[in-house]
Length: 507
Image (cartoon, rainbow, N blue to C red; front, side):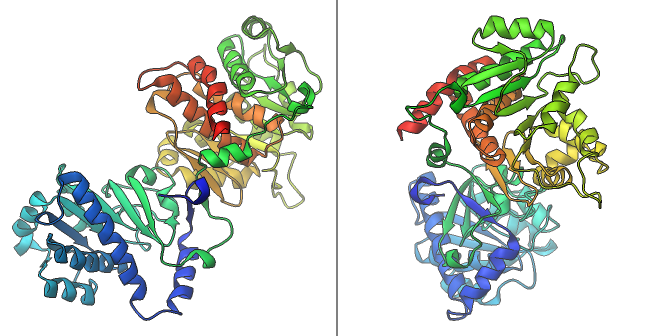
């Protein structure tokens, strides 16, 4: 995707996209939008064939065609490919495919094969010979998973073929990004007008491949705020709190940290490392004796004990039921008016805190401008269960956006759900989706460093929504720099934060 002015990609709800399409279609001839989409798709198909094989003419393409408009887009794109010398076979999985598209492809010299028991061998043979497979099976009306014969076709896509999805990979949920097997894994998704939410939401985003948007004039008719956005470098640079020449440590932000325990003193050291490397003016640390000694030994600039702060980081490495912990300090921080980040052990205390913070009808107020929760999938499942909305870790991993939104709605907080793609979700459902981190970042203590970065940004004045998503971006980029393609430990990530920020601000 090529975002304007350096901005990251954005994505929208199906309902909003349908409304925008209807408004545009009302002012253009019938079929004009499909032809525009097909032209853009054909250009992308030709480019991929040239990049993969060195040629367009003489290559073989298979179109997987379902009953919706995505199938029509694929068929009309196939017509354009035939005119460029591509041998095109359309495998039709429904008796109600786009009739005009099928007729146009047949007239241009392409083949249309209705998939069934009698044509199975012909379909499999075409698939095996394909240089390119175009997925036009399902569109905005699709749901997770595929039925036969589409499922069998997808299972037979050869490894050597490039796969281009039309609008979205078939078999994923368009609005939530949820997936079930089987579904398409694309090398490239060519979408029309604007990206669908699933293209930025995990786990479907992992099936999207590269993303291209063909402009069909929807922009003026879309909501001012997308459902999902992904920050790019320019976005982060604009949001980063650069201290003015007149700044002192208090104006730069003081972060209070309640973290660590006798069993997990390293969590406190790593959380503080993330905060200090991010550039917070001061850290005040509150914790048990052993963890305090570890923090002060690693970071002599830290001030031990409570005092004036601009924000709190609560819970990293905290064991709520341990005798040497200070759940009172967490309670006091939540009772204050300061922004609070709740991680790890603090999440287990939070449902109890919520009981005293509902209105007369039992509704939790919107506190997304003050509270940021940072669970991983297992912690989110436990939190939801404690809040009376039972969930299993596996369910959260299959539909992370849906469950993160549910947690935000039930708590009134902004929720940062850690993962290979990190989601930051507000109670109103708007989200950011950051995927900068290498897989090597899946290592002990990485979440503590992330909490420190986000806590420092809260203390510097960013909202929980901005602090969480900017922190996820910088955390991922710092991890990539530390890794260089190989293993890392969490302290390596923290050490790369200053250079990562400096590089962002130079652009």
